[in-house]
Structure formats: structure tokens, C-alpha cells
Length: 396
Image (cartoon, rainbow, N blue to C red):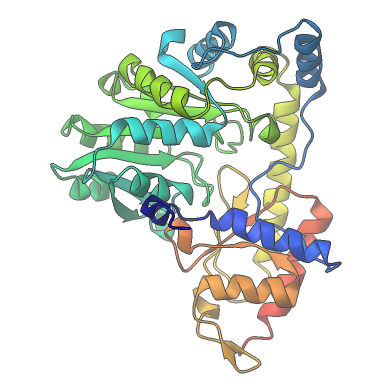
């Protein structure tokens, strides 16, 4: 069949590819530990599930407005105001089938062919494909290890041209776990004030998993009003990945444009999941805090274990649930006569020899690194890192 050339712009997520490969190997009876998927291993808190049951029993099982139910958008508006000091009314919010759809909606609504998009690297694997699909041109900016993989204001300034339309970034960052501080965001804002033609998509999906202090959004700065789309959701902080609920808050014109795009693609998000989302945002937050404490303990444990591997260079991240070590000292080495030249090849080697699935840094824009998720038990963290260390010691 002669399929659309448009498919050539869509790159399969390396995270999903590695997760699929690990799952298939497990199904064949192989002993595989997967550290590749970005998903909390906790079940959704009971109060949220109870709210879903109540919604179903009350007959809330019908189509929802494309932008989301008014009640849920009000809850999001209140959350943004009370927790983030952001003033977005319900008419400036759209609910989507996961934050990924929110991001793609915004990219499609903003970009024209040839527009340049600044992507601070490391970046989430799906950003480049989204930009390319919309006809944009990717301009990566390399965050350096000595700056916790964060891009400086000077780097930002030097990359902006008259073709720059957008900058997309996440904080806390997937994959590095780095968190933009208030002083760093202020420095970015000073640059952006000199370039009012540049719009910002701020991906804040890991907001609740922040070990460095209070989350700061770039949208809080008065000079950035109507220049930022804040994307968030319930998947990571509330362990609600399967519920597929994300949202975007931004200028009303952009929200209307996203409503138009989403109406074409999927229409409104799940009615029961939105009712559960109201409880997630308005209900007790004890479970969120408990999960963060457990994640922080796991982070420290994995950091300790990774530091025992000679040649691995790692930074203890301030957020999310990933470690992103530099593995460049192992590239160029061989196993059984086969040379390993890239982090992609190294990940395949670790999957085959150690039985551990992790993700190469190449699709994140950092080819010398690999991403390991610590959204798993302490026992699995210890076992998996020990397996990795033994496998790496076989390289020569």
C-alpha cells in the first residue's frame, strides 16, 4: 500500500520501543527488568477511584465538551491559581487525552512550515517528532553536565533568530530530572522580553515530583502573559497514567485553536476520568506527598548504586523519576569482538547481557547518556544496577 509521506515525519518513541522489546522478551520467559517506561508503579489513590465510581453511578458516562467539562476546568483554574499563582480562567483551559495530546495540539496550532523551535537538550523524545510533523525546524540547545544539563540565558539569547517561533522545555525535566530555579527562569525571561515574537510551551507534567523546593512556572512572570502555554496533567503526580488526562492553559485564542484541532481528532476526553480528576485536584494530597517521599528515597538509592560503577558519570537529579548518567567512557569498547559505538548499541547490549531495559540518550538529544527510571521497587533498583555494573565490566 502506498502510504502517506507524512508518516516519515513521525518517529517512534524510543521509550515505547524499548518497553515493547522488554515486554516481548518477558513474554518469552526471559528474566528482564524494565527501567525504560516513565510510569509510576503505584496504583491510583483510592479517593480518586471512588470519585470515578460515583461519577459512573450518577450517569456521567456521556460525551463531554471538546475542551473538557466546566467543573473540571474550574478545578484546574483553581489549582493553577492556588498552587502556582497563575491566573487562567476556565475559558483559557483545554482538557485533552493526556498531556502528550495537549502538547501536540499546541504545536500544531502555533507552527507554520519553516518556523524555528528551540529545544533545550536533553528534551523529551516526542518533542522533535511533533515539531517536524507540524513543519517546524528543530534548533537544539545543549545543556551541559556542569550546569545540570540546563540551558543558560546566554545560550538562549544566542540561538534566537527572526525565524524563532517557539521554545519547548520541561521542568522538572524528562529525562535529566533537572529543575529550573527561579533565578534561572528570571534570566530566561529577561532574554525573552527582548524577543516578544517567541512563544513558550512549558511542560510541567512532573511538577509534583520535585525534591528541590516549590515548583516555579515561567508563566508567573507578568511580561510573559499571553506568551506561555502551560501543559500539565494527572499521570505522573497522581499515578493516573492509564486515565489519559492532560490539560493546557494558555491564551484564549490558542485554546480555541486547540479545541478546533482536538475536535477533529478525538473530541472530548473521558467523562469519568475528568470527574476523577476533580477529586485528584481538590481532594486530599497525602498520597501525592507519600509517593514523592518514596521516589526521593529510590532516587538516592539508585544514585548510590550507580556511583559504584567505575566510569559512569552521574548527577543526582532534583525532580522527576529518572537518572541520566553519561556513559561515554564505555563507548568504543567491545564485547565478544563486537564494538559498541553508541548509547543505543550499549542499551541493546545491556538488554541482551544484563537483562535490563533502559533508554539511550540519543532521541533525547544527548547521545552520550542513558535514561534509567527508578519508578520501581528498591529491590529491583539494586538488582538492575548490579546487573548493569557486571555487564559493563565485561567490556574491553
